[in-house]
Length: 92
Image (tube, rainbow, N blue to C red):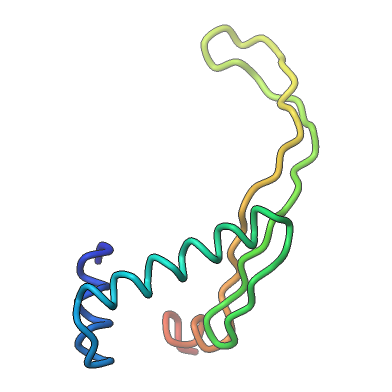
């Protein structure tokens, strides 16, 4: 499913136009991205949590030369699925 399919599904479930559903979805995604970029977390109960995580500096190897190199510390976005989401995907 891509964004267009998701917009169509949202429009069908909410009786919104596709244009309005696209605006709502885009605003939701942009808000989540901005919030996580600022260092905060976004929790959607049942769906999951988006949060920034810091990766420590570590050593690695250059795949072309095999030389050891330092991979700098960085911040990455992380998603942790909620209980309901996990149960729907992999029921026990």
